[in-house]
Structures are given as structure tokens and as C-alpha cells.
Image (tube, rainbow, N blue to C red; front, side):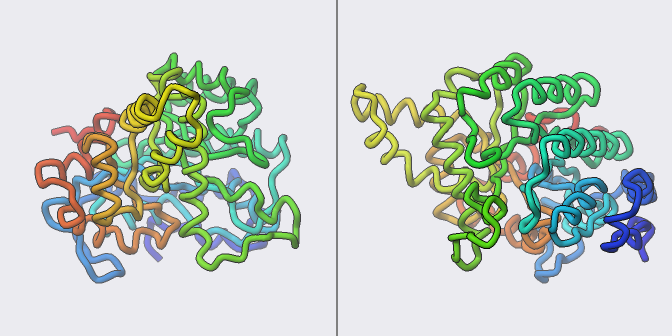
Amino acid sequence: MNAKDKGLGWFTRRGFLYGSSALLTGAMFRVSSVAAQEAGTGREQAKSGVATPASMAGHVIDVHHHFLPPYYQQLAVEMGGEPQHWTPGMSLERMDTIGIQAAVLSISNWIAGAKEPTAEQILRLCRECNDFGAKMVQQYPRRFGFLASLMTLPDVDASLKELEYAMDTLKADGVGLMSHYGPGAYLGDPAMAPVYEEMNRRGVVAFVHPANGWYDYRFEPGKNPVKLPSLGAAELPIDTTRALLNCLGENVAEKYPNIKFIWAHGGGGMLMLLCRSASVTNDGTGYEPMYDRLSKAVSSWYYDLTNTISPPAIHGLLAAAPASHLLFGTDIPRGGNGRFSPDLLAALPSAGIPDAQIQNVIGGNAQTLFPRLRQKG
């Protein structure tokens, strides 16, 4: 067993249900700090058989990288989900294999098949996840950034308290948001305005990740109407699309211009729906003025390229936003655990990223958003 992965023996179903989350936290952090800090330039081949190009290895910043703290894993099992096996060492090892310099941590969508936590459980889960993320940054400051979860939404008061704690006490690099909360409260909902206002005041970077469909079977066990194969490939980016379009409709970009939104998976299906949005939701100002307003908002936001690197997607994104707003992501440990990340990095030039922008897309743009991750020396 690699020293980075000591403590994996705790992650049995019995360990999840009856073990102490504090003990699990200690086990997770039994890794070699020096080796982890100095690593990150590995050029080994990932499981796909393709190696990260030498010109990119060690310069990549992954803005779409998830972490699963002990209480998150424990609660998911208690709520009926499958055990999730993850430690900081597993992320570090994968990053070194691919050649990732640093990763920005965020919480992903809730475990499929697990029931929704109660309001009290969400409060504890949010705080434990944020404390754990901050501890990872403290232990590996050159390898990780951290986006604090606001899974407390749509509870405005709880979210404002967590935002203050995360930014002022934990010194988070930004926040991680979900496309919606509960059964259909999408980002852009005016009820959450006090949280947006505070984020805007602080100039927060806000990464938006899709949540499981609000009609998911967890709300009506045994009555899930969705039967599509490979549902995650389509439904998750589509839920990002719903949130993005709702933010456009609520003029979020104009109201809160200091929030630097990063939309996962290239913004989902947003590009194909701009024309339709300008036509169908027109408020009487005319098509061109409406389309121009929507386009201006879209161009002001950022987009991660996680599993979105293909000529149609890249050409569309470059027509909608500047290359300086495109960021690289892997979805580790989910989405195949970065299995094809070397392939996707190698495909950036042929997909349409100009040669002069390659280094910025794989890391430079992220360093502008997260200056703490700039390489030193």
C-alpha cells in the first residue's frame, strides 16, 4: 500500500456507519507532506495509454476537482448510498500521474441513490466539508486551492454565516455552488439575492456544478420517471444549462458583476439556446438588443472544459467568450477519475485552442482567478 493511501482500510461499510469521522480525518492525512508538495510534474501515462504532452505536464491547474471528506462518505452510506473510496493521497497520486500542478477542490453533486440529508445534517455536512478543504490547503498549499460549499442554500441566513466563516476564517479561494438546491430552487432565484449581494461585495469566484435532477427518485422513491441510458452524460450538463439560463433571465450578470462565475462542462447546452432565449423570452425590447444583452452576460463568465474538448464545443465557446475565460478541469475522482485527461490535454490544439493560448487555458487563466496558485521560483 502506498504511504499516501494509509487509512483506506477504514473505508468499509462498517467503518462508515460506526467509525469516528475525526479518526477517519486523521487517517486520511497520513501522507508524506514533502513528497506531495514537491510532486506534480509526473509524466506517466494515464490508464488511457496516452501521456500528457511534455510541454503541459506540471503546468496544469485543475479547477474541477472534487473531494469527499470523512463525514460526507459516512453520511452518504447512512442515507442509503454506495460507499465512496477517496483520500487526499488518492487525489495527489492521480494528479502526479497526469502532471497536474495544482487542483481547486469543490464538493460535487450528492451521491446517487442516497436520500437527501435533513436541514440539520446539511449544516453539519457543509461545515465539515469546508473545514476539511481548508485543512487540505493548509497541509498542501502548493497543490490545492479550495472552494467553500454553500450547500446550505436556499437557507439565506445559514448561507451568509457559512460564507463569512469560509472567506474570513478559512480563507477559501471562492465558493462552490450547485445548479439548484432542494426540489428546484435554481441559481438566480431572487429569494437568494442577499447571498449574491454579499458574494458580489466580496468579488467572489463562484464555481457552479450541476446537481442531480430535481425530479430525481430520491424525492419519490421508486417513482423515478427518467429511464435514459448514461444519464450523467446528458442530465448533469443540462441542469447546468437550466441554472445558467435562469441567471440570464434574472439579469444576474448585470446585478452582480463582481461575482466571477465558472460554469462547469462548458456551460452545458447554453450555446445552442442563446438564440431561442432571445426570441422566446423577449421582453419587448427587440431581438437584437435582447441577444446582445444575453451575449454580453455569457462573455463575462468563465467556463471549465471538463469533458468538453471537441472542435464544435471549443469553437462555440471561443465565439461566446474570450480564451482567457476558458479553464481546464478533470472531474477527479468522478467522471472516470481523470482517465482521459491526458487525451483531452493533447487534443486542445486540434480542438481549436490557439497555440498562443494553450498554456493559459491549462493553467494561466486559473492562476489569474486564483493568484495563490501561481508557481513561485
